[in-house]
Amino acid sequence: MEDRAILCWLATVSEEGLPNVSPKEVYAEPSEGVFLIAEIASGRSLRNIRANPAVCISLIDVFSQRGRRLEGRARVVPADSEGFDALAAPLLAQVGTRFRIRNVIAVDVSTESAVRAPSYLFYPETEVAEMREGAMRSYGVRPRDDR
Image (tube, rainbow, N blue to C red; front, top):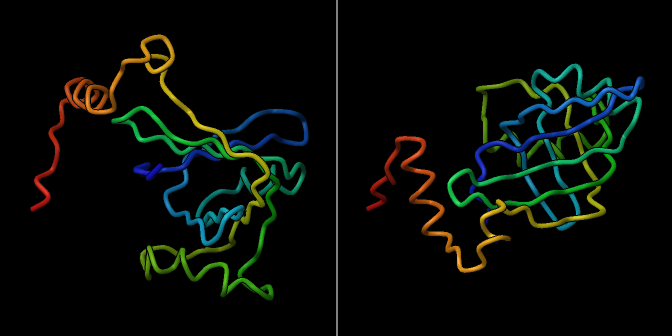
């Protein structure tokens, strides 16, 4: 499935067991089983990953109301460490000089599953186009003319 998610959502858990979910704007999947996130301003996510590397990532297309859920173990790769440049390359390609990437959050994905809105489950005849149209009406937006 092609991802049309604009953000990914990273879920972490603190040392005290408190959950945290935060949006991440800059991410990449350079290869199967590897998910990279640019750490730009994510102090709490970093602290949580250092205490507990288990993470969950959600990528949702808000218009089709479908997406993916990734689970795995994360590690923090600081900018001054060996291997940072290679990991940061696909992220820097997205942002150029707009943001300073302080660290890369590298996730080794162990499980991937589909995420679907309940309409797809309870009404199997539901079509993606129908969901897109409904979401666009709800959000008050129109499709872009991609000539």
